[in-house]
Length: 211
Image: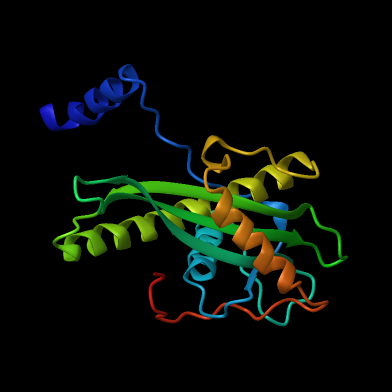
């Protein structure tokens, strides 16, 4: 009896302290097949996004499906900015920034989600003497930011599919927090405009982690 009551008690306690579980990401069933493309064929974000789209209920299109909606990842940029130093002037806390430029294209050439940048950031502690633990913490944040980025893109895609509006409303996590990272991502996207044909499809791989 105690074990059965525990989840209810925990849920009430979390609600009382102001914490609310985020609703699961679900895409409309009539969205049609979706394909994720990226200028980086080894992009971990493209793989993560494809898996998240599938879990959200959409169908992942085959590379030969010309009728698919394409989520095109135009650019990804990472950055580390020191935000505090110790008594010797060595950086001991950083802000890890992640910016992605993407757009969504339909088969008829229309763009329900025009090119836009999504920016996320997290802070982490850096030990100037022992960098091993710092690297471990940073890698964990990298994976978390990728998951959040995939969820953010899906929320925008879902909002457009449900409302029919030109662009999806930005969520709180999507507010600009890394202007320099976003600027670099936008400049990279300008330097590599999307071709008339869909970009190279993302294939599972084990690329090196960003530095």
